[in-house]
Length: 282
Image (cartoon, rainbow, N blue to C red; front, side, top):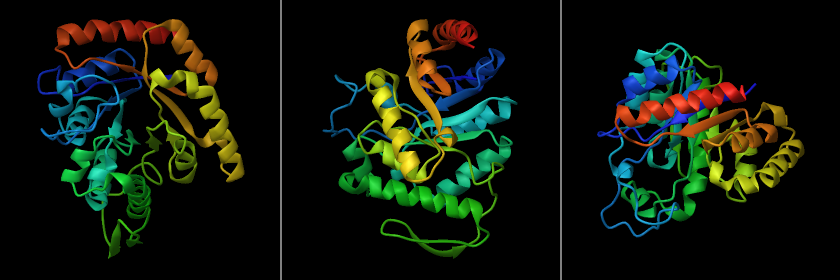
């Protein structure tokens, strides 16, 4: 069975998180994802992976956990995801508490999508070295799991280091919310198998998905991880039925449709069209 979700930059000028979350749940969507950028440096030199000028939503977005907390309070069933959380820019002790708190408040509805990020200047403002960001991502994920699953957690690594600590609440979901890696590089598959619960690539790279899934299956078998235990979510699924069916046929468990950061009068009709597409694909 395939699940269907939506994602949107939750900006100060778009439909706000509460009415969007309510509308998504009313239309039968399984999940709602919000991305993250703490800020955008004015002197940014790193090119945007999407090409061209950087869209303004990147520096107008709400904090994802504040926005998802509001969405949690306004819904009953909708899963609440980050797509993605820039984990390298966050303190893992604080992040562990934020995610666990949201999971408790929502009664276990959190999905933690993570990534390494692309904006070197933004990371630099947080004291993160772009060249070593993926090593930091791994340690922070492992540190989160330690805090979520142990009464007295400790972690000693190159980028994360803390002695035994107490931290509650613990997540409702056993072992913590599922962690999905949003990345498509040649190293992504090994990282998914090593320390994540699933893969969340972007749909415009769909031509690479068959080889990526083959590689992911191969690595999972080599490391003794059941491939079927990995959640496969495709981000930014298009509005064409044939393309969506192709993703389902490849084995993706969740399709997430992209919404523009616009007012309700523009977003809700598109949400209706995606809901109709989801019904055809179900």
